[in-house]
Image 1 (cartoon, rainbow, N blue to C red):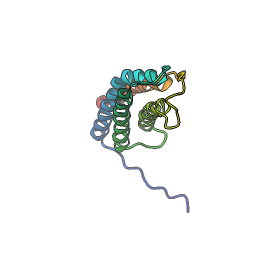
Image 2 (image 1 turned 90 degrees about the vertical axis):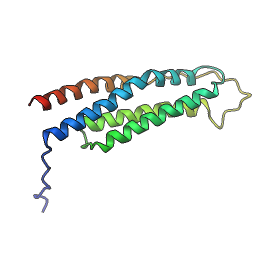
Image 3 (image 1 turned 120 degrees about the vertical axis):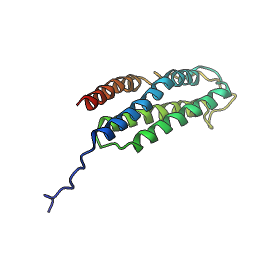
Image 4 (image 1 turned 90 degrees about the horizontal axis):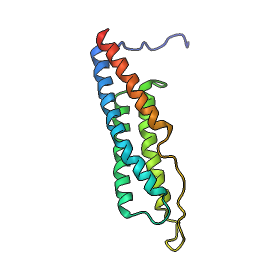
Length: 147
């Protein structure tokens, strides 16, 4: 019964090359947004009340990473694939910034209470992993195009 498997369609090289190029473009956008994300995280972690514009800027960053994640998923991601990992990293970036904003602008925090700040390492290892994934995607794309 379980011996019949659905045959996986062979993808034409041009289609794969186009999808990889589109994914590389999304990763490039995510990498370019990393400094702003890191700055927002740092501002959310400082002692004292963060300025309101931190929440607005952070919201835009979260939206941008969420869009990149959605577009990466729309390109098609096999479970366990590099494409899926890249989409997960983009979502991680969005949720990390969002979590820091939620901590900094908590509904349960009293404006009369002193804010001592909190520590956070920014985007951490996933930021480096996203940059390294870009290099792996480019190598894969070059291989598909030449071969």
